[in-house]
Each structure stands twice: as C-alpha cells, then as structure tokens.
Image (tube, rainbow, N blue to C red; front, side):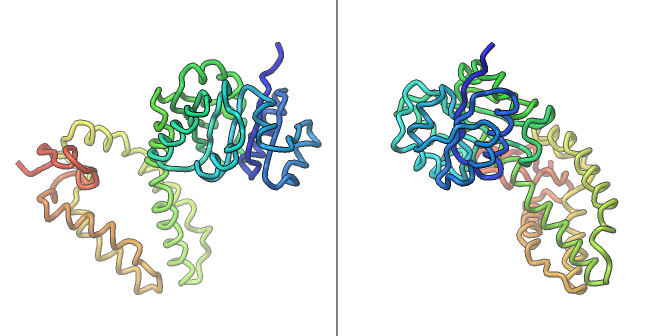
Length: 297
C-alpha cells in the first residue's frame, strides 16, 4: 500500500531527524527550510526540496512543521494555502499560543493537530520515543500510522488543541531546576578538585528515588490530603540553611532562593507539618489554591 506523502517544514536538528525517519519508512517526503542548504543530506536520501513553503504545502496532504515557535510557524506558512491540509505543529510554546495557532490554522482551512516530542533528535523513530498530540482526533486517527514512524509511543491527549502544549510546559518545568541542581553539585565537586563524573552514580540514584515518590505526591495532590507526609514542609524548611551553606564552598546558590521562599510561605500559611507536595496549593491560582484540606485541622 502506498505510503502517505508528507511535507516537513523546518530542518533544524529535530526537523531533519523527522524527515529522515519518514524517508526511512518509505514516505514520499518533501522538505522546505529558509536555508535550503540544510536539506542537502536529506535530498541525497530521496527527499524533494520545495522552492517555496507554498510549494511544500501543495506537495502533501500531511504537513509537519518543526520550527522554534508558533510565531515562526505562522511566518513560514503565511503565504501558503492550507485549505484541506492536515497541519501538525511540533514546536515550543505556551498553551495560550497553541490555542491562537489553532485559530489561525482553522481560519486558513487547515485540519489541525498540535504535538510535542519528548526526546532528543537521535531518538526520533525509536519504538519507545514519546510524542503526544492535542486537537483534531480525526486527523490523529487518519495519520496514526505515519505519526508512529516518528516515535512508537504516540498518544492523543484529547480534542483540546492546547493539551500537548499544556503537558509540555507542565513536564518541562522540571527540566531546568533539575539540571541546575546537578550543575551546582558538579561545581561543588570541582571546587574540591573532584571530577563531575564521580557524581553520576549518586545523582542517578537520587533521581530514581524522586521518580519513585511521584505517585505518592500525585495521590496527595489529587485528593487534597497532605496530612500523612513522608517528607514535610518543615523538613525542607529546616534544610534550607544547609542548602545555602554550600556557598561557603565557592558555589553560587542564589538560584535556590525563590524555592526556599516558597517553602517559607508554606510554613507561614500553616502547612509546616503537611507533605511537601502541599506546595502545589501555593502554586495554584484561584479556587484550587484555597483548598481547606491542605490546612492544619
């Protein structure tokens, strides 16, 4: 059975990996990028380079864009006719930006699906690589076989077009704090002449421990019951001085201050003996942030 023709717009490292996976799976693949030279390796493997973004869109029923932002995507496709095309965006941005992108696509006649890739370019096409999507379920179902070429763990989150961006930002919020914490540890070891590599076995165990307690925290958050803590707010509050004491080893710990301020606010709100996951209540805006179940009886 003939494979669906696909157009890929945007040939950075991730976009090129997407196009390469589609070519390897036998899909007729048209590509376009503002800097045409980036397409040369793909052309050598059978991709067709379109002269314009409009030509690229006309070449295929399924258009996959992989640009940095939604604004970049709109700018690239501004002059293209999207009527009747299935448009899948795989770029960064907020849920509000995803909703605006969906309206823009709808006004231009496109059937729209917004997605996110939860891995690095080298993992594109692997059976366990996760991509999730929000938006038109009919588009997802129609092109599921093609979308699975990009990653075997392919999920439709729901009809709301901002769901992929919502989960992307929700999950992505853990990345920089975790990395900066690791980099801080590496800086502390380096101040003593120790190699960062020696941190790996202990940091890995620590991250595994964090993973193991996430189900407990989600149960507490969803129930609103923080009364049986494995780790209380008071414990974290007491540990703040030790965390900041790392400055005496020649490490800049100023990035931690806002997190310690959040813990202090939780203590002041009467949550000291509650689970540390009660911080969710302080981070929530509106009714969820005023949950009475989190407060001291």
